[in-house]
Length: 432
Image (cartoon, rainbow, N blue to C red; front, side):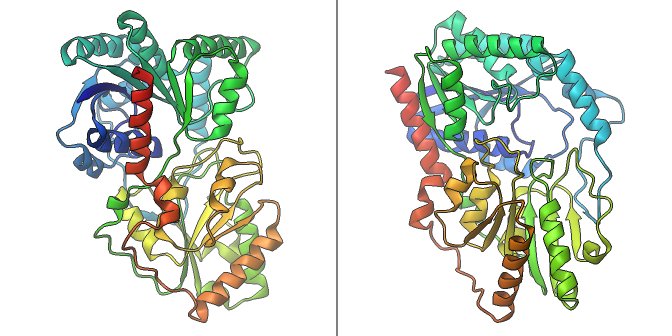
């Protein structure tokens, strides 16, 4: 069995979507002839932690190093509580202070605040390569510092390297660069990384196209490997019981995933149908950033609740108990945006109201599924109409549980095991 060094700053017990991607790769790679050895950081201060995820990677070799980056330093401060609170709340305070800190770190650190992990990770990575007889290096970003670590290790040991892009990072259109100098440095850094990598994968075609257009002379091989869902995650899940027509949104909220058009549509619906607030409930699961939801309109406030970050299996209980799943992307979203949550939505086989612009890659995926209704964010009247029709279908008993027994054929492409096999095949192509 070949061995791959996986460089991932974010790894369980952290609970973000990018963690799911690399964790599932590590879970299934041994079935396809690759044994992962993980290089990551020690405990950091982070908004979402899910210790239950570690159960899926028992027996995996994981090397956790020290770091001087702000998240790691913050975790070591006396009295710092790193355990998230899982509680029901009607609203959250604004996150403007945290947002300010993020912007300041972008000004100070290059290419990102995790650059202070680099000396520890390079030293540990070198020892792993020598002791474990590594055949290939695999790094995932963000943070971009993970790719720089892989680049340095590849340069010294002459091993093949595959870089994974979960988001944009090289284009000035989609990555905040505060000065022309920052922009120039990003582009310079881009060219050196892309020139060094043997293989590049990304979650969507537009991200690949952006990298290609900015680095036309690269010799790297490219592959799109989307995010997905793990069918095993749905086993033994007991759906939550709701008495009202329940709409669930799962994931973080921010300016690129803003509920504002949905709120306006819901307000219109309630004004036209004063009896509906007693029959409809909307629940948002997750955190929010750079967006203030503390003052909801009075006519919808009683029907909306917020639940802070939940362990993964608990969030699936909500999804499987919902009558309608809500998906949000703002008009200014970058073309390559495909959040991981949409694949779990599809796996539930529940009706989905997707409020998203035409130009995003996520739309090209969801329009293939009949249970998904796509409405552009600017069309508030159409959102209201669809909400009304979906409620009427539910009230008349037309909503039926499909019963999750096997993976539908049209979803098999996005199952985590299938995606990992695609990754393993790409690794083999690279080393050959």
